[in-house]
Image (tube, rainbow, N blue to C red):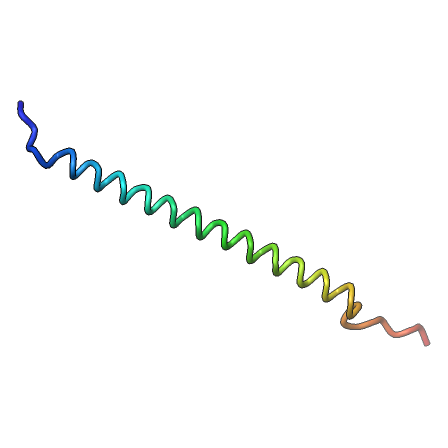
Length: 60
């Protein structure tokens, strides 16, 4: 059975689309990790600089 002449081009296109999707997922995962790290660092720095939000009242 003979394959059509454009089959290698279709397979190349599908491979490139797949690589593009994988690259996009990798980028989103990297941005998510970076955003989580920045949020965690900001909260830690905020807690260190400003202290706790409230303190318990001393006993009467």
